[in-house]
Length: 272
Image 1 (cartoon, rainbow, N blue to C red):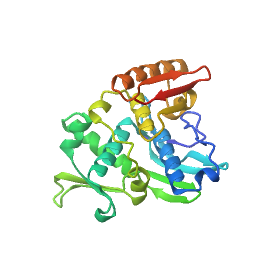
Image 2: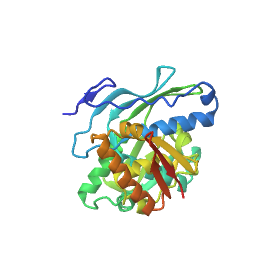
Image 3: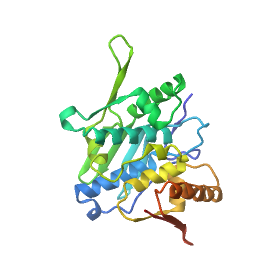
Image 4: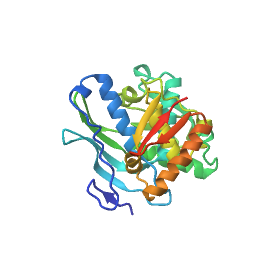
């Protein structure tokens, strides 16, 4: 039985992100895109114990603006496997140059997805894929920023995987909302190498995803903020060691050239 959580839950509480957003900071479409994208990537997909049941959230506040809810989420808890598939779809959508002319639809093969994501190729892998698509399709995000208001926006609008006889087709279609296309597919900085990504721990994947949309050569995140938004249940000292382990992975994969944590608790990621 799934548990329903609210923003006030003492058992499982998301970090509400503010980003110190001001009217001036959000007065252009580009700034709105960057802010919304940052919130979705940093606070929606979580790094939690895979053996724990997924929570269910109803209008969970992800970010505030002028002390008002600026983004809320309804749906089942999303984790790194959901993010892997979501980001994979976006990369393939860019490769296929999807857009208004084809109703924001990306075409994929079941076998290709499982092979590229390095998932189990047995029936377990196909069930994992079906479950992931179902979760993403059942999401609902409400966004309320200056110049950007979206109601009940799903990460995946729908999918078509079977023919009229209910037989799984070789090619599946994933349909996106135009707003998701506008938020994510306009960037040239987010191409991910899945031969590398599957080697990373969930925390290293989270850091990679955040850095992939940052254009600066040096990116800074506060350790305690990263800890909160990942949803980690580890002690902060253990989480710090996990970040240092992620650092080794990210450097060995040439995703960063250097990382340091200063005395104030800020993590500085240097891109190659």
